[in-house]
Image 1 (tube, rainbow, N blue to C red):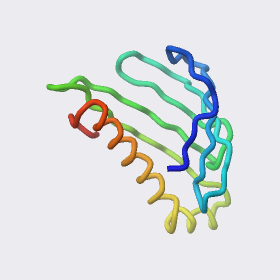
Image 2: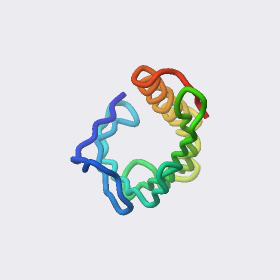
Image 3: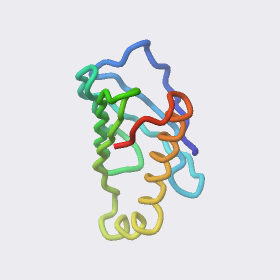
Image 4: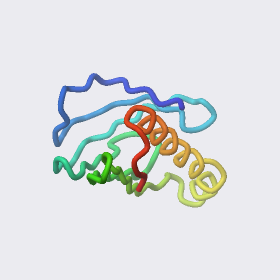
Length: 120
């Protein structure tokens, strides 16, 4: 998927934690992406925001809910691209599909690891 974590992670997440990645959002061109874990309320949710990277804004909320047979995870993502008019064209043609592919891939990996329970 062109998504490689480049920072070492501690055993446990904490607010203020910085995570860096190398992503290839378009045409295989590598871009550094840095996010910060801004909020954690275990076991219910955590939130990350982009500090540097391909988006003008990236705000990602991860919600967890116990359900029969396991855990359901729901993502709410708000993002915006730079370059207003041009960015909206690139979003429609390329980026929206790419973001959906990333979350579909993550869902598949989690389902393979933990079993298919629920997708929010």
